[in-house]
Length: 351
Image 1 (tube, rainbow, N blue to C red):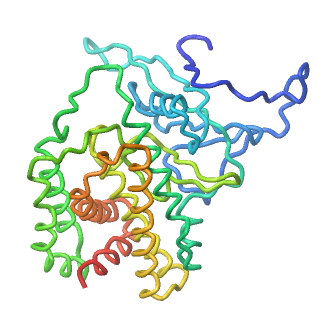
Image 2 (cartoon, rainbow, N blue to C red; image 1 turned 60 degrees about the horizontal axis):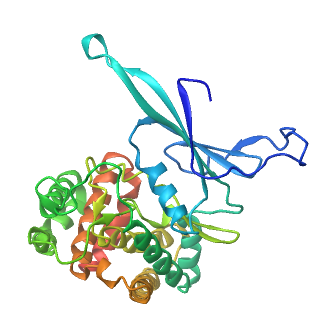
């Protein structure tokens, strides 16, 4: 690759040739996923073998995805899209006396997963049909992911002894609650304000010292939309971190990911009510059962592999409450029509 571009190889690319001595003819060529796929970046499928995700805009290095994907692949984690390469560019930055150079990540190249659908599609189908057996698979693959990530260490020294968050987890959660109260208006806002004391009480434990669970490199944005179901199973995607939380420390308790995944199952139930006409009482029961099954499978997998200490149970509920506050903030700032989902979940928690 000519300068100023560079390629970091993460794994051997599959051959696109039609024979050992034949060059690729270019058929089938490139295609995108289509307008029906909601994505922050732009992905291109090449010959139904490779996906090139172009970051829009390019992200300054260091970026978490290349190192994390390489580590997961080396650790034998199969439920990810196989990583192949990262494309970078060295460009000028700043102006005048502050001018310099920086390297940015342009694109990630991974394997194409045939017949893949994200959780906002396949999981809503499960909720509509009342099926819950898939939740055990989610718990198992999340545990395997965390066990592998628990051995990941960054190239530069990192403080893994504190919370890594300005003011601690309690301060961060209180800020999310304040923003949710300030940004949620109308009847929903009045309902939320009437339960402020109960919500604040749920967050109190985050102001106390952490339990014995270690801080690990978490996914950081783990919800059902990041779990693809494809022809041969499941795959976790998008290790770019949480785009809605500025300055979030990548090393946190595993409970952060688990809480977000659990709340996303409850959001799926709300989507099924709203878009599929599922009776609210059936959707609420489905959410309780899938959440319980996912957590049970997660605990069993950790115990079976000798790592039960990764989960601090006491953090689950406060992290879940914080997550719902963040969902309300996200809805207010970026996607107003989404507000029904976190509000529906909170109403089931505080009837």
